[in-house]
Image (cartoon, rainbow, N blue to C red):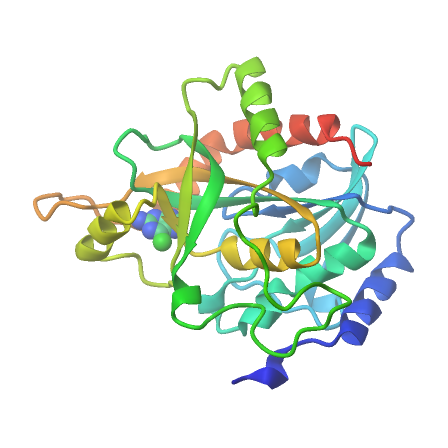
Length: 287
Ligand code: 6GU
């Protein structure tokens, strides 16, 4: 096993301390912006931003549509830190490297993590542009032995064997539904199960049909790894998918999945998704 790709507690601490020395913001909410959804970071007031390439131990984002900045600031007075662009397995980074930011969040003082992504819709009731509150996931890479908690366990972060039946915070899902109703999003706010694939290939027709039969409502290439590491170190988790395309599950269909479509639908619905997360942040209470 690639035990040597893990980061030690001390390495994580060094990165967190490096950041804390350069900003007065002490974030309690950490946000991860998905493809085409990085506009949320621009809403932060009193910004202090770092390019990923300047942060010790940080990987650098390479995908088109991801800016690659860690932004500190305030949303309606709430101290936040926001990843504008995230890391994916298919970029070639280790599973430990792509989830490192969650442990940095924890050491910065973050208590609640909110993640967004772009995903393909498997549920026949979903339309392009729907926003799905993630209530659970299928971790397919996990079935194949790819899990960010592989390797030695440091108890300072969390337990060896992590319970995943309460990964997605129920109260935050409820809050999202309430806020979404208030904002008039009732017609396109859904909930469901997110399935992660390794990517970068989109699913085949047979794979799409399989995932649908397995109980997945949406499919993508991110989020789940970060959720696991965030839960491991005891942060509350909330996640949203923007349904950017319908997964092809029919051999007669002329539809073809492509990244441009993902980004284009993202641009159309992004502002509303960002408004939902923004409004939730202003209502989150930490103990
Ligand atoms: Cl993995 N599949 C499809 N069809 N669309 C997506 C995706 C996957 N990730 C983002 N959009």
